[in-house]
Image (cartoon, rainbow, N blue to C red; front, side):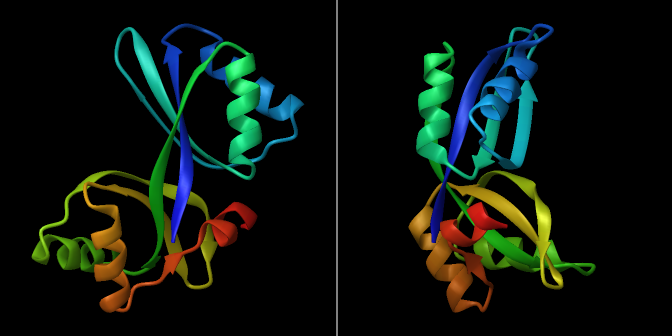
Length: 143
């Protein structure tokens, strides 16, 4: 139920982000979700793509430092309090959310959110036990 995210370290300068998206476009790799955090000197671009291995290879060849991280995609009820229900279930069990970001598509009547947890396996078990739908990598890459 884990999926792989790639993280790219970028200089915070004009064209940095564009050079990543150009390399992915040229390799026919589709971005499914992304998050960009920055400081004054650098940024961390986190991506869910449809072909992780190829994306890492292409970006490394283009001179980017690329890491791979396991994250979890969870369907979140698209209603007031939907996200709170997930966060409350995790808090009760002592699991911390390190970061999260929204996915580009909906899954049925639910939104999809990408989570990075401090205890990924425990978080997956808790969420499934509490009735939340944790999506497989194959499903997310294909959305």
